[in-house]
Length: 342
Image (cartoon, rainbow, N blue to C red):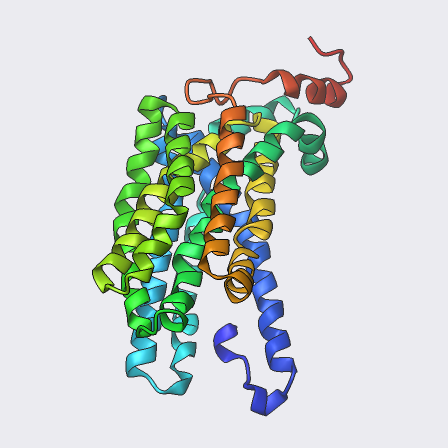
């Protein structure tokens, strides 16, 4: 629908208002999409492979970033002014594929057992905030650096390369394309690595790397040398971000019991998206205008520090039984069945 929005010349202020409304609709869609996708992968995974299986839905980010950036480059280079509409219109093919898959999916074994027992949560959002408040906050904290720095590395960097460094737009886009191409492989690699080493050490590596790389990232950019600009983007995305994003689906899912897992993982993930990814490009642009790149680097380092602390406070989960009833769930079961918790 974004591809067919009338122009400002045609309908005036309604044009940007319609764009904002449709972007909100996209946000609502993503809010439900991510949790369902990763839980289907994680809960269907064989023992000892949840990190790897959970990383496959995560690969949608580098794959989407790659195809979206290539589509933008093509439209910008070879199509007339209205060419920006073409990628949006072609995306209907993705909608069709997604709908085809979802209509044929069955519930995961773990949740099917809960439904058969008749003990699913009555109000999952309320229940998860009541029984797993710490885990929701930790998930938000762990998501902060991954999501916030990602948009600095892939969105803000484009305006920085053109506005501050005076480079062509294609320079930054090329770096993003390279990082996205590599990310299709590094994301499942780190997911699989978390099955061997644990979620915390792999995730912590990404967070610590993002913290330590905050200033060197800009130092590399400021050289103005194109290969070093590309290297900065690749290191930040494929080592810092992907080391967190690869095991993230399994890690977040394992923090919560089956009855509230969908709501718990989604709340931690999406609330942080609003605070981190949704605002980070705007905050970074404002900091750059007022205080220079040093303030932007300090901002990204601050987000990474919060994530480091959150990971250290979280418990290791990779060896647990994802279908086992957790202690926090027993109160919910008792309330649903009228029995006293064991």
